[in-house]
Length: 220
Image (tube, rainbow, N blue to C red):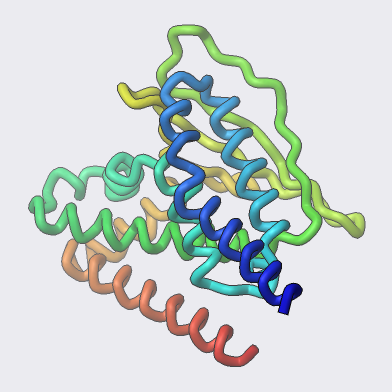
């Protein structure tokens, strides 16, 4: 009985950290340098993922809670979506922009969740940060160090300075920037099926990803 109670308390404590712990950090983020912000978020997410047994077991709900609480508040979805659509963003209606941003946000959550689900014993390494004091657009370079002699995974972040602090709006994994990658795909889809066609494609992709995760959880 005591063991069960201890496990319950530990589980609730971790959940409390995931859902509310970021609030204090978010307030401090406005004054943080971009590299300090990225390092803090990265280390906190990595440690929380390693410490949470349900995340280690692949609990998608817990993983999504972590992503929503500790990563999403520091991402500028509007800018990411607008840059990914390029000239097509200006042609979209306000309703289409809202739908595109929502679906793109869901896609990013699935992307981050998939990465966190793979967290085991990796560690992070950051390159020295260099930027002019007046810079408002910077890149923070890092890599994920893996075990077993596997090559490190290059992971870089592009941030823009805003009134509320620095926000991440693009990510580079293994040499490919997210915005540039999706820009070509989105452009092709819009040329073929229009903006509404792209929205439909993103919606279906998110549904497929959600079903796969649901099936994975059910199969365990």
